[in-house]
Length: 388
Ligand code: ZN
Image (cartoon, rainbow, N blue to C red; front, side, top):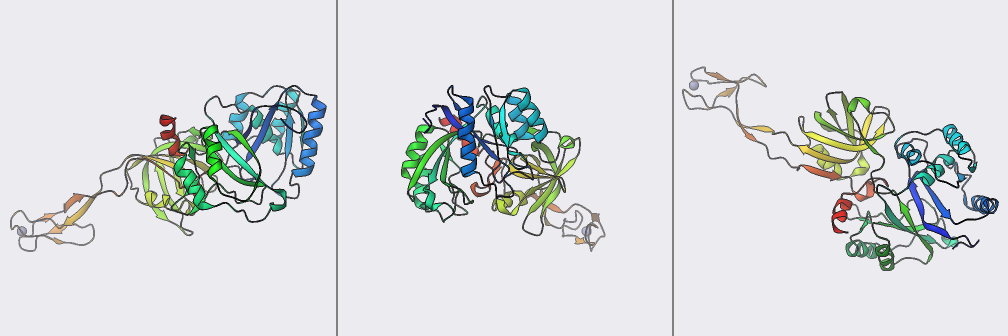
């Protein structure tokens, strides 16, 4: 029940949209609520007052908007906004055709997310996030959330995810921005989220809400042939490694893959930390499926997850070949020029080799919790799906 006595139907919804849009706000999220029958003018008044009070119009990146709809737009409206680029113009046209009441502030871009948030439904997948809010006098100051209690919660409630990054000592519950949120716990199950929340030691919690979300669902991804990959999409692409990984300035690791349609660069950027160790072990000929967002210049897949499907046998030289006549090791004739027996002159280009032991294994590997995108489905959720 709100202060204005409207019953919120179901959960408020927090919907994340295309994470690769360069002009997006930080988390590219939009929220929506459903209320029971009410006076539309009154609802509009309440929403406008809230915008006046809370929207950060001074923030360059913030272009808020609200929409009031009696029926949700099609699910496809959401799908386009999570996977592709949607224009403000097409959103306004859609809203007009649906008879929506709406208002965009500044460049009105917020209308796109607001509309997509109403259009989302959890018909394919969903998770929850329990969000706690700070007392207003604390907004903008350093948050107090006890790391140890977060670790304990993480180990106790296995249906929660993306809580704590042990390798990088990063408490992922706490946002980086100076927003009113104290922390958010993501999970599969709302009852468990309440219990998980009770384990967290922190400064006073002013209020809390449990959102239904598309976080951790991979709904931004689309399977593509390499030649069809467009900038700003998020894709799943399978190919054979055709250029060994190399590390560039800034610690980013780049390699490339090809399929029958084309080739594309793939990158594990510095913030993905130890994930780069896996990527550096890939070799030409390995078969992988990469999941990630596409940046435009140069066209590169920013890897969120990788499924290593096949590791190519790598041979390494153990010693020079042995002469079949004399039984002695031959001598090298120089780099890549083969071998020759010093005594009898017999030549060979085949050194004695052994299969190199690979330091990585086939299967899925993902970026660490600290570098994970809101929409990326953590591998833990596959396990969770079997358990819950
Ligand atoms: Zn010989």
